[in-house]
Amino acid sequence: MTTPPRSCPVQHGSPIDTEGPRVSLYSEEFAADPHLAYREMRRQYGSLVPVNLAPDVPATLVIGYHTALRILNDPEHFPADPRTWQKGVPGECPILPMLEWRPNALRSAGLDHSKYRQANVAAIAEVDLHSLHATVERIAIPLINAFCQDGAADLISQYAFPLTFAVLNAVLGCSPEIGQQVATGMAAIFEGVNADKGNAMLTDALFELVNTKRKEPGDDITSRLLAHPAKLDDVEMIHQLVTLYGAGIEPQQNLIVNTLLLMLTDDRFAGNVLGGSLSTRDALDEVLFTDPPMANYCVSYPRQPILIDGVWLPAHQPVVISMSGCNNDPTISVGEYVDNRSHLAWSVGPHACPARSMAYLIVQDAIDQLLDALPELGLAVAPGELSWRPGPFHRALVSLPVVFPKSPPLNVF
Image (cartoon, rainbow, N blue to C red; front, side):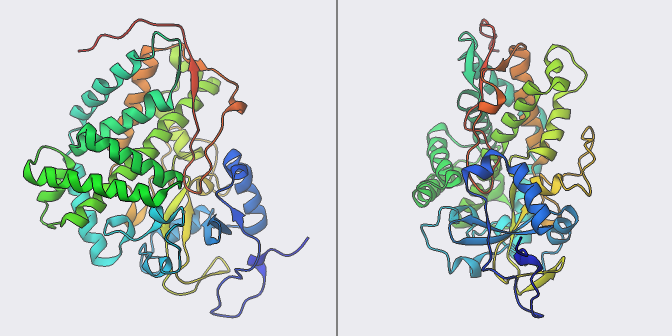
């Protein structure tokens, strides 16, 4: 067997050999069984893995937990600003909208990062979680009523997506009409299909939302961002909203679905629907460890070649944290997930998710509403027949078909 590239001797100051084989994170084979892929990566490469995020888009994937903590907590050596990197990336690259520079906290460093981060944290902190609980219930019940008499449903298209989307529109103060354009554009970006057109559609819709809220502010995150002392202009506002929609639709949808899959296929949770001992929150915490909805993200771009774990990482090439790979690192994974929140699903350090409390509430309430209404819910197919969507960043099912005894509609209050 040939020596893998990471262990080849390199001269001091030179980057990792980029000519060797790379693992494809966008293939259907990777999507079908990423955990097998992570184990093979760990065996062959250790904590740092040469990967391709898309054809001819090289990166380093971090699958070592302690290595990830070091990187996430070192924004000086691992800044999140991708502008030097993206100069060499074709505009039609399918993952560019997910990684390109935007004037927001996720893609900025230094004072710019602080400015955007403070505005977002302040706007999110004022969300009333009690009102949010009522909002989730108000949105969930009509969705359940739309299929509860059918005895079958796809929980992604008929429940998880429309629920997370409608809840996010509510907290952002976005009308359904503008929101529909946002959803279409965001879907294209995440899928990497017509991503550039999706990006343009998303930008146009959010520009309309910002103009609406400048004229008629309300009790919502968009209005609070506009009123913040940072005095964000229209372009900055659009990119704050891009981040919020990106974090609030796809990852939350996937977290709902992946948690439901665990609860419907694992005997420890299957009993929960009928009064078992493990709760929705327990299942949620386990999925955040084992199958987080954003499996690989938290991207940074070293300013110069840097030596980590005996490997030289090139300057201005993406370093991607595998939350899934790191959480399942054998050096820290003990298989105990109840009340264990040391996972990296929300990231850590200066770019940690500021909306964790909101996300927990939305996802847990969405699942509990569904299981309270349809306690005999079951998968319509064998687990092995489910398909996972290819893509370097998400852990996402194509569909989650379920069956259940036909039930009368719930009362709408």
